[in-house]
Length: 210
Image 1 (cartoon, one colour):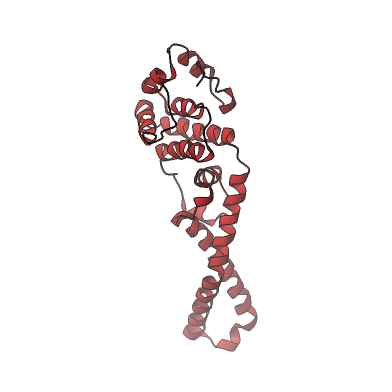
Image 2 (cartoon, rainbow, N blue to C red; image 1 turned 120 degrees about the vertical axis):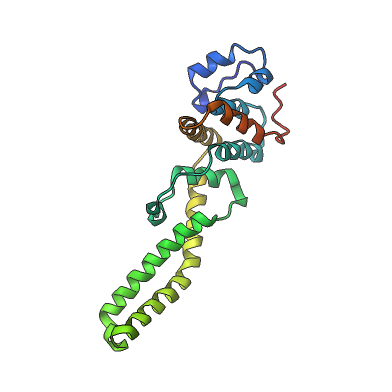
């Protein structure tokens, strides 16, 4: 790694550049790094990173930032958020829908199933009687429709995430991950987060800061 690093392509701040110049080497800066996003920029500057190693760096940043704060409303949206695209990018071809993504896709399938059954019931509901019998039929129809739609919804969700991930470069992924770490550091101790990030890369053999 050339020293001091030129991490401007990752959105590194002038404060980081000034701080880095106070150290004689990348290794000494890495061990003393007080902020998680600065540690990320140092790791991203390691030369000749393979694609898998790039993903490892970003994935470590995501793990350090922790899980997203979510509300029930997020499970009713069809678009892919920036954090979700970043997670998909960091997993690459090994990415599989987690329980949250399956829930998002499954909820959308349920909404479609419910809407379809309501429309059909409005036209043909009288043929199935009234009262409890009709309500039971409606519920059964929704569940059958949902079971049929859910696998397609999961497949579409996976394609959405893959498409969003393909739009990201390593530089863009690092920028986005750095923003997540900066936001996390507002509520947690920055030095502790930086140490956690370094710990996540202990087995990352190509991160040679010597």
